[in-house]
Image (tube, rainbow over all chains, first blue to last red; front, side, top):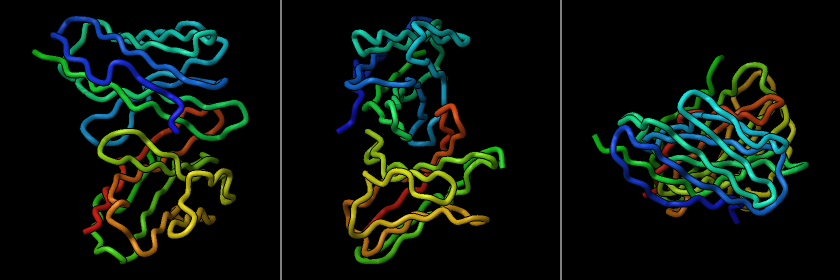
Length: 111
Length: 112
């Protein structure tokens, strides 16, 4: 079964607002990553946060990681129409050479 | 190359026919992964390679799926005797040490 579960499954906001997506996982991890997928195309890597990090920023993206709660959040600030996509979290477990994906959050930015 | 190249982009097969998908990883990347995405939902891990060696095949259906990564050739994923339920987008990814995986654009397989 998939390790990650994402919340919400779908999110619709107005352009300019902030969007927050959450991801929970079940086992110990080395890293947690967030990816974006536009309309069935390939995944684009957004950001990686290591298990010993608590927060990371990249442009308009802010990722937090709480290993005690086994959860992560992705915040997109000042959203744009081009941010409309599905967002997936993925974890790689200790000793495992593979990513385990959540079910994704479908984000729609309304102009 | 600088990106993961998957071919073909689309593949249509009659039920029972064979399907073969190809992936050229980014040059210098040691790890290759195959994932299956059904209906734009979750990504199911199939198999991973470290160079030409199978690293983890726990996600591979045992009977009809096989994969290879041979030196100086694109990696391949082959499905014998396709079934309707194999219809999905198959993604290949490659990575080096950091687990930052780079994904190809996928091959959409439609079994009719």
